[in-house]
Length: 334
Image 1 (cartoon, rainbow, N blue to C red):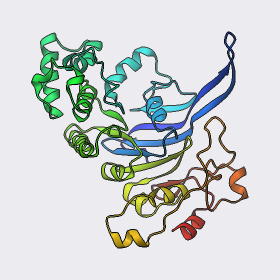
Image 2: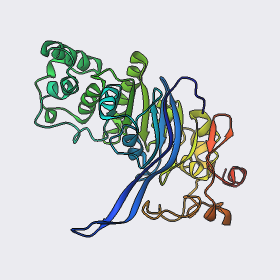
Image 3: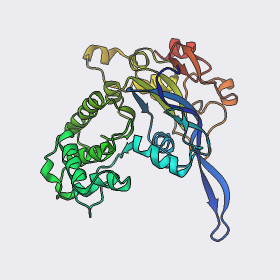
Image 4: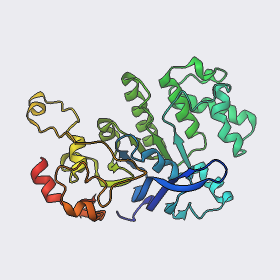
């Protein structure tokens, strides 16, 4: 992971949610290890895709980076500033440059507020512009995301899911941010609308020079929009590489199994390829397995995997993996 042109640096990030027992005196009896010691960088202007099964910690990662959840441990550096150590006033200033697009376009918009108020709220919070300048800015943002600028007095229930997500995008762009966490922004939308929203995000990135952390579980869409891809399993990043490198030459058994489920466009190749069905269920993040988190479901696991947590290492240039037996995975699973 090179330091050149790095906008965001995540180092050994941990987020555990306490499990408590008792009505009056609540004692901690355990912890949900949602994010457990992950590291990665994001360069200016790039899109890093973060993929994995539901409940693996993707959304918690995004929210912890933005300090919407307080990290249990680790560092998050944005433009060289450690967000974990930044005070309230500094974080308020930095929040203008970091925004989030939420997963659910139905729940993330206040039904009692007009579209104009929803989009202008960040401008009001940060005391930017006069009322007229804010109105002009809202209309400009609506045009930017492909909506009629005269929709400012309408309410969210008057829009479709795709239009609501465009409103969410406009709100995220109001303060001219540099970095946006896209938290599964298309998963709640119809398939016919998903491509429109993704194309919009790509156009805005090119036009405004945005940097994205794109969280999703749709591997085909991640391959379309991402420059690099990180694969997450049970709170850990198990593989990180350039998009094409990861899809064509994956190293980790979990990544190989995931990619075997992605349909191919070539029917002949689809019939001939090996489909890998993982055994068992995903363990609970409140009680993760010892050693490698994936060993309970891994088809090539050995005794070492249940005892020793594999190091997240750069196996090839720019291609990081956390596995004891990369060569074995390559030989036996492909």
